[in-house]
Image 1 (cartoon, helix red, strand yellow):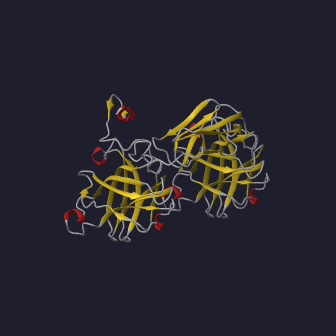
Image 2 (cartoon, rainbow, N blue to C red):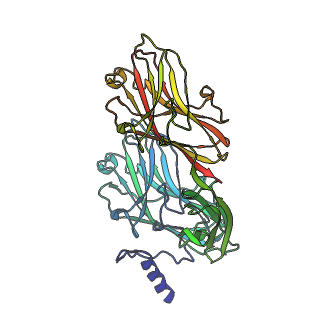
Image 3 (cartoon, rainbow, N blue to C red):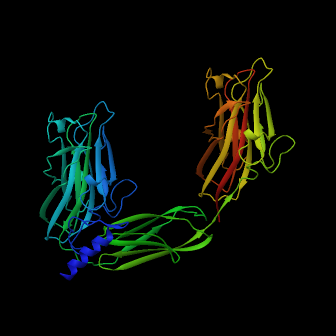
Length: 511
C-alpha cells in the first residue's frame, strides 16, 4: 500500500502546472512493469510532431500526412497532451485508396509472458463529412494495431494487424468521448515493435481524418537488465566559439534508457528523461561554446535499473572570425573608385563602366560608404548583350572542409522610366551574382559556380530598402577568391544600371 501511495503522489507532482495539479484519470502500471515510453505523451515531442520515444510512418501517394502535439482538452485523455495523426486529401482533385499513417515503438519484453495493451483514442473528420452525415460507409476511417515479433521497424512487414473497434467518427470541431481499447497477448520474443496506424480506406478527395491517441500502455513483467548502456557523441567538425552547434548523443540498452545528459566540462548543457525508457535514444543537444580552445564533452546515460555509462571526448573549439577585408567599405577607396583591398573587372565591349565611393545616405547600408558599380550605354546607338562589371578579393587562411558564411547587402537602381522598372521589360534585365575561384585565381572568367542573388530594383533617384543575402558553403581550399558582379543582360542602348554593394562578409572557422 505504501508504494502505491508513493506512485500516485509522484505522478501528481510530475504533472504540476503553475499552481494547479493535473491528476491522471488513473495510473498506468508501475514503472517496473510499464514497457511503453511516453505512452501518455506528457514527456515531450520531437520537431516532427511525434511524441518522444515514438517514430512515424506513412505510405505517401496522393495524400498529405501530419503528426502534432495536440493540447486541446477535449481530445486529451490523460494530462495535457495527446498524439494527433492526420491524413488529408484537401485541395486534391483525386486521392489513392488505402492511405496509412501511424507511429511505432520497439520495447523489451519477457518471451512467453502475458502483456496487456491499452490504447485510448478518438476519430474525427471534417464537419459535414459524408461518414458523419451517414451518406458513406461508417468504416471509411479505421484505426489498427499490430506488432513485429522480431523488433523490426518496417510497418509493411507486419502481418497481424488488428482492427480497433472504434466505430464512432466525430465532427472535427465537436469531439466526443475518448474511447478505450484493451487486449492481452503473449510476447513471442525478447524484443517486439508495437505499431498503431490510421487507415483511410477510399480514394476520396477533399477529406481530412484526424485521430488522437493517448494513454498507450503495455503492462507486464520487465526483462532482466543484463548490460549497462552504450553511449556515443557526434560533434560537427570545426566548431567555433559563440556559434550554436548540434551535438548528437545516442544511447542504447537492453531494457531502456531513462536518462541522457550532455555536459561541457562540469556544465550541464541539456538532458532528457523518461519514466520508462526507449531501447535506443537519440537526442540532438544545441551547444554554444563560450571560449575557444579544448573542451571536454561528456554524455551520460542511465538505464531502467540504475546502471550508468558515460563517454567523454575532447574537442578543439576555434575562433569565428571575419575573413573579408574592408567589406563595409569604410576603410577607404583607391583613385579608380574601387574600395581598398578589392580588385575590379569588366568585359568591355559597347558599354561604359564605373566604380565609385558612394556616400549618399539612401544607398549606404552600414556606416558612411558603399561601393557603387555602374554599367551604362548612354549616348550609344547600340550595345552588346551580357555586359559584366564587378569586384573581387582573394581570401586566405580558410580551413578546407569547414563551413563559412558569405553575406552582403545590395540594391539596384536604373534611370526613372527604365522599362525594367515600369514592367515593359524583363525585370531580370539587370542581375547580381557571386561566385568563387577555389584556387585563389583572379580571372573572373574562370569562375564556374556563379550564383544568382535576388536584389530589388528601384528608380535611380528613389532607392528603397537594401536586399540582404546570406549563404553557407564549405571551403574547398585554404585560399579562394570571392567575385561579385553586375550583369546587364540585353544589348539595349541608352541605359544606366547602378549597383550599390555594402556589408560584404565572409565569416567562419579559424583554428
